Amino acid sequence: MSRPINGSDLRGVTVATLLPYRDDLSIDWDDYARVLDYCVVPDGVTAALVNGHAGEGGLLTQGERRQVIERTRAHIGSKPLLAGIIATSTAEAVAEARLAQEAGADCAVLFPPGPLGGGASVTARAPAAYVGAVLEAIDIPVSLFQYPVTSGFGYSTQTLCELATIDGVIAIKEGSDTMLAYDDNWRAIKQHSPDVAVLASNYNWMLPQMAVGADGILSGLGSLAPHLFVELWAATVAEDLKAMRAVNDRLTPIVRAIYGPSPLIDMHTRMKAGLAALGVIHNAAPRPPMMLALPDIATNIAKVLAAAGRAGDVRGFPGAAR
Image (cartoon, rainbow, N blue to C red; front, top):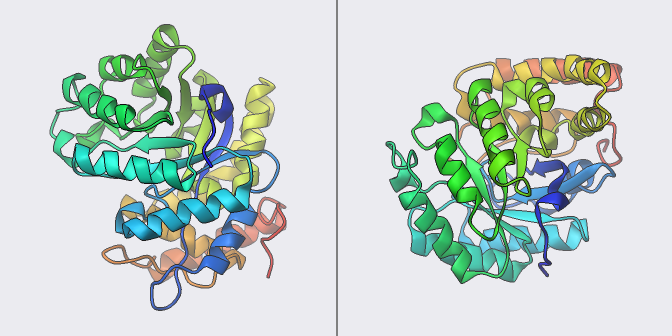
């Protein structure tokens, strides 16, 4: 059952969970429980985001999305549970947000809908109407999902600031993917809406984002190396730059293995390959049209994780070993 939460409840590490399948591409609930045991249940992980890009939310049926929320809610106890809302229309987003609330989500994470691409997110007129319509239909708060600014879906700084003032918006997943945009957005949002949590989420910029400022981390890579993100956040809170750099040095080879090769869209499939290499899941296949990681990339990921394992940087939490 959902409960009242605010931005301060999301301070720390929110893991965007991956969703494993059986050979017939039905959801493997046993392996999903293992994923949750590995990357969400452990101490130091604050919250979970399900049904996002990492969880292939757009490729699931409505019934499957409900099941993911219900099963996650039952498995992770009182930790905040965020549910991705990947919709094309406002009506679809309202229906999905209501479903998420009924299934036990504490917060609906609103991805920009397709029709708001091509520059419609530069001004707040359409996005504010979209966010407002969803909030009027539910009793849980929402978080905004900021896309890379080069995607055509990323909100401008002015738009983000206007959306952050809407009552019920408690957080922003900041994925602008440039440090200039992140820096500008962080400063502006903290000035105008200081209680709205800014959750860093630019894959290649974790250390610089932490140095500029963040209220937490939200990452799909947390499914693969949650303990490193927990350590990075702890060092950030302690304002220990030396420790932050040390964690970043250990995290960087994994980041490069996952996000380095083209196309970038395969990043979550590569994370699945990593979880399979660790023995957390049996099957690394995504649902079409997503594709399995190429063999050479999967082999490199396994090698990087093996090296990290010898250094104590993976298998840091119970549930990683079969």
